[in-house]
Image (tube, rainbow, N blue to C red; front, side):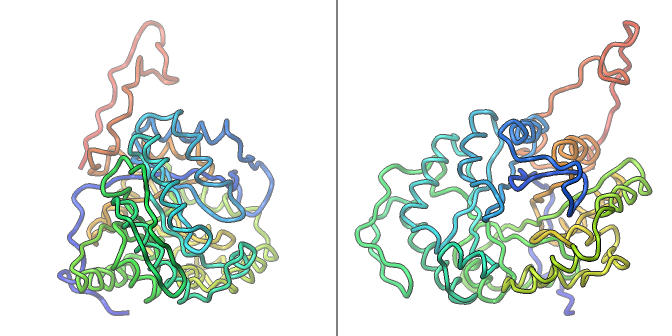
Length: 398
């Protein structure tokens, strides 16, 4: 693996935004089993969204695909229940037209008063895409995505667009009602292949990586920075990770082991078989980190690949005490990562836990962390004990 020089990498991030995750495919305490699982419901998703909002997270990612509830529908339901939380919602080139996608995005952005973030998803599972009616191979999907974004971006800026490409064609297409954010809501995108990076260099605002070891992330970011610079563009960078944080290292690793305690070899083998059909380079890189083995899951200090044994997409977690996890996040910030999209099982409890234990140890951007309310009468259980309220603990931010 080539080690990039500091000059090849994006500038180190001195502040970071933290996003959380809405598990619209279900939640629970154990992976790969229905034991203790939590069904998707409006009430449960509302609890997580309100927890993220009240704890001051920058936003939440909503996943997309046939195993998830529709991300736009869920985001629309959560908007009136929250005050400042942003919603990272997918657009799907090839599964929707750029004009219709632009209208829906502009509506959601206006109704949320500028709280929409747009996640461009080209897809990585051919079997699922065939079920949705899309039969293009990997590289052709990125040609389609390039055409989609060329039309979408022009529409969002108010142009009347006539366009004829290899896959898409529109005539005098126009968006009558603009989004709240100008020129349009920020575009997030994750693609590890050469074709994906080319699209990112041309169109997106935030380039995302899954949680690979820092050396691999550094190599990817250096490549992406150079591709964007060749187009006279500068990008922001984010990373998608799970987190398992407890007050001691031993307790955190015990929770990690518990998370996969109900997994059997058959479930892991079935997941491996499913992931093998994906043509996503990012998924291939995730699967290669653990190779289906339980005995070598710590692939980098405190970076654990156990989640990826059965979960597609983001498959790694940072595991440790608050100080250690904060230090590992700062290592990614030194590479140029200025936002983290995090999650943990179960998502409601871990949303609180991460904010309480790790937020005070990170240099947060002004858009993260400012909404947390002061604790009133801070006793052992949050109430006044014998008419005595201990002085609140003071945590300094580095």
